[in-house]
Image 1 (cartoon, one colour):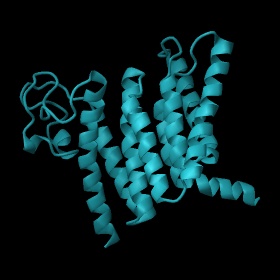
Image 2: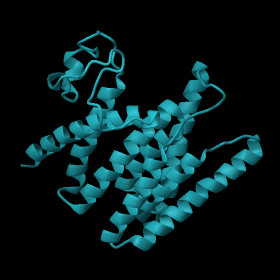
Image 3: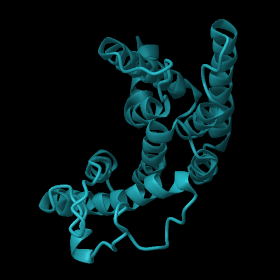
Image 4: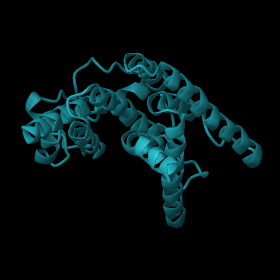
Length: 251
């Protein structure tokens, strides 16, 4: 039974991932995420239902538009696959529970933030601030509103301090307010103690990426989007952060 439900969650995840692709593409452009229907960004042709099956359609069409043959970004299948895996993994971790719902919603907010920041170096307030509100609502039903409020305030404060110090040292903006607002949202969901772990992981991942890009000579003006690393670390920390803290204080 668990395997069948896991497959169902994988399929639902792929479907939600397809919608997230719409959000990632249209939200930064100020376009409606509902209307018009999915279409090729190159020729504008409407994508037929048979060509809009998550993951499978991209593979069948070999990543190209059926109408004009234009290449379709691999980001589409990547987002759909990541979301599908997250849904299935979340079910295996939490089962059919309130924690599963919170985890899935958390990830559905983080994924578009990560890819939008990767593409545009911007984090939409509608996602970060909206995500903060959603997190507080979950905390009310979960009986942890005080912890969530403290988590948001302290986590945002930590990144704000880093931003001020970074600007003072490097004489330029080291971290945008979008990252700070995202930190508030992350703190609301995971708590301030877990956020410290999250920040360590994100900084480590960002440093590795920066080093690789530096070696390849592909860093422009030393600008690296930080939200993708915060998002990856957020998902990791949500799952194992509390275990790490309990292990540390249990030593």
